[in-house]
Amino acid sequence: MNTSAAVRMSGIRKSFGDVEVLKGVDLEVHRGEVHALLGGNGAGKSTLMKILRGVHRPDAGSVELDGVAVDLRSPADATAGGVGMVFQEFSLVPSLTVAQNMHLGREHRTRGLLDDRRMRRDSAEVLDRMGVELDPRAVVGDLPVGYRQLVEIAKALSHQARILVLDEPTASLPYSEVERLFALVQRLAAQNIAVIYISHRMAEITRVADRMSVIRDGRRVLCDDVAAVSPERVAEAIVGREILHLAEAPTREPVPTDTPTVLSVRDLRAGSRVQAVSFDLARGEILGLAGLIGSGRTELAHCLFGVDRPDRGTMALDGRAYRPAAPGDAIAAGVMLLPESRAQQGLVLEHTIGQNMLLPSLRRLGRGPLVDDERGRALCDDLVARLQIRGATGRIPVSRLSGGNQQKVALAKWLALRDTGLSPRVLILDEPTAGVDIATKTDIMHLVRELADTGTGVVLISSELEELLAVADRVLVLRSGCVTADLARSDIPDEESLQLAIQGA
Image (cartoon, rainbow, N blue to C red; front, side, top):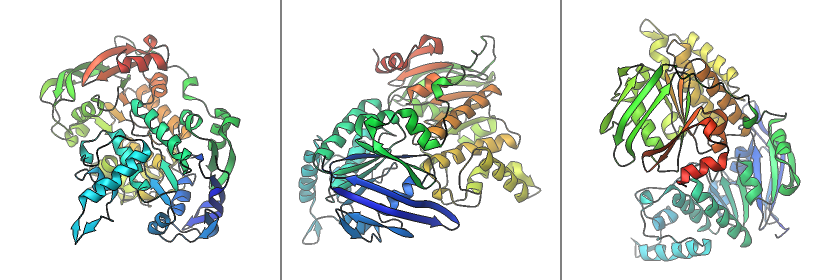
């Protein structure tokens, strides 16, 4: 690893209104280094990276790239300085090819016409440097999610990036694609590129990073070699206190076998992704759904919530036929979904926290033809405090929150509905802790347990096997749209056993 600094940020301060988000943060990343950046949701790491990317300007402090002081006034300035960033939410155009996405906004032209051949040639050179076998002519919308991630990285590198920021790069990747990403990150570091790797998954950090920095409450509280720091010390640095590990939480008592069934599904089929799925969910039971990306987990959730209509099969809710034609029908019946993509399906980002929280409850907050604003504000303030949505009131836009706090708002919508008198009979959670910090993950899982303890049937979709083993009473394994295993928690001794079941071994 080259010890010369590719990035040096010194004394960075940034406030938004009366809220001071960064309070004099220092960060130094060397050439050829993979530097992990960790912190709780709302700690300030995204703001720090947006300053490096030229999205925000610091109120105080300095930024140097390769030893030269710079004033990054825009993302274009950062790109010109060699800074590339790959966000959690992909910015690709699905209908365009790999080459067209990589050159979007800076297309090669010959005599005024698009020069596709030159763009394909340049794209192939970048992909070859990355060690990725991918046809530049492939349409992005046809690619698996793992390859879309690689296209995002290739797009950044095509701008001659010498500093690459990866924001939760494995959040949407199937297990089988993670090793490919790790190999690519190490290959890029070997090419003297500085990689800033943002992740909440400690196992990834120890696998891929050389050094780490932890930010808490707008200050850097830890900077050290990864090999020199224990996971427990990292967790305490992130949270500011010792926390209870999910696996150490008290074990739930098994749901009694005579507990009434709240949801019954028989021979459900929908397109090619849901094939003859059958299961029963008892009141107060947490049913885990495990499987690789593309196994049919999300598609099954969409059928249960009325987003998609099944081709055949039956569903029953508390013994009565249930066939929602739209999500509104599902909500009225007490079936609620926290979707996988909070930004695209779970929230209206330009609306306030309060507006998002109360969206499903507006009809229940009526006072005659009007909405009872005072009651709505009180409900939002209570949920903000109860879920510890940090540095926020119900009146700021959701887009200003960190990813984990946005997830809390998406979940709060259904808690608000419960608080207005419509308790969820079935709550479906699709990757509820993707991209959230360890403390928020623990909070969400404890909330899931509390909901189940009050009689709500929970369907928990998660790629985090530790999560499933910590809270699920039972795990269904899906592969190619079919249920291939129905496992009681007592039948799964460890994560490796569950991973083997998922892989079909």
